[in-house]
Length: 128
Image (cartoon, rainbow, N blue to C red; front, side):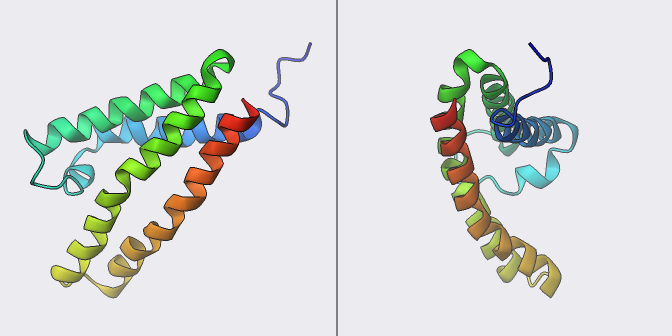
């Protein structure tokens, strides 16, 4: 049996890499993530940033592990839906704060990308 990942595993491993990288960034460079946390949430924004980083790392680990891949794919889809309000906040903040057009375009451009991420995660779940 070959140790190289099969074609069917590649989407799962790429999704896990995306989530793992993002999870690490929540700890290595937390400040940009802090600004996505609504101030209405209790506790510090940094705590929420770290908790979401832990969630991303945990979901990545679940996807990498074949036995838990189906659950990991579902958790990833739910995570992408769960962070959508933060992305909306980022776009609205960019408008309110009069950010440069490039920054506003990036912020608004992130919104429609969430749905293909959800679909990707659900395909990983279904192919788990």
